[in-house]
Length: 469
Image (cartoon, rainbow, N blue to C red; front, side, top):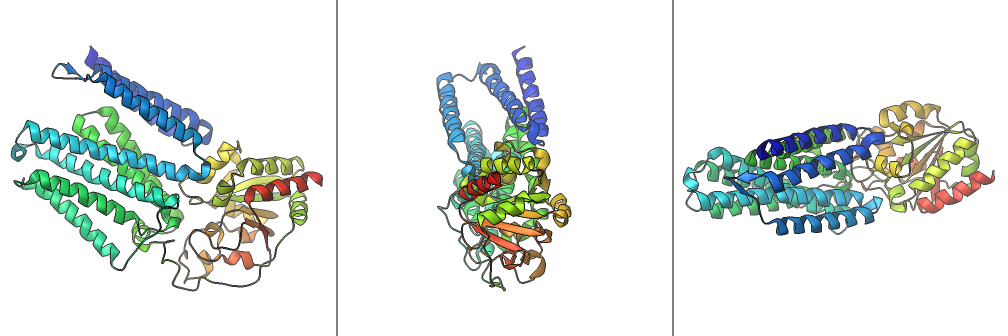
């Protein structure tokens, strides 16, 4: 009976994961979808703790288990409540890295269990294969996510040296060959070689992410997320745990699909992302990336007049909006303009910000209606009929060099074609280049005006001017 109850718990958990993931596809239901999946996970965990049996023995060690759950729950809750929107991408990387570490630790524990309970020379080959896969993928995900976390919070800089990609390939091949040797040949020093795989996989994970530039971080985060899912699925295979297997497959598949979509949005192959180091320390050194030219500034009063008497305004949010925590003021400006009869929409580029969907999450926090968020293709169709485009901290995703300059590192990347609008107002702190490290030709075009300053302060002042008209 207890076994049937445990199976039922796992079935409920698996179904809630699928339903929750489906609900996450729409911002209106995303919050509830997250709660549905969390409830399913809670049921699966409680079912495992109290109902799981191995040869008639239950888990035991309840004090240790619940102490760990309590510490993890409190720490996770505090971190989630205190995190700023600007720090959300690095928190995603951190949590994803913890998932990879857990998957790797499962493989280490199961290998040690095999080593102490049976002769490794006669151990099941399939089990060893799954252990090795979970170990390698989980270790790479953990190490890579930690480097991504460091890059996103600014503590780790892009680092590349001549021949690094060749060294990465050699590291990966050595890791795979050593793992294959353990599975097939079962050497006398198998345990030593096993930990050698751990070290090589961790080193590879570090070198794998180090040269990748900041502008490619959304793609890297998606890819590492899929790695963690696959590693978790390996744990599900090991334990014949249906809910763990389902969750891992869903995360792995979703991460892989998102990675493909992000690459498509940048018009680049995954290989080019991983090898090209777009946005890295050396990516902007070649080609003609400096356009020079003269830019013009716009006063707050002039910007307020142009926007207040426009028929249609399109807002393009970027990382600068997140840094300034200006999403709520932006929403107030939107409502004020609409009260004056102005149609206001938002143009969202797939790789704006530092993680997939960063701008969507940012605006959802301010209760901006999802119907007003236009994807890149939709927005590009409407720019020709737009009177004013207000760019808030976005840079590379609106750079015309992606279409006109073959020597530019971002050439070929689909962009928001804001230059098609009648007027373009760009809010930036300064004329410094964006995350890709290249100058933006848009800033020097005749129809473009610069509004310098912190996004929140600039929007507050602009809002006051609009309300006074």
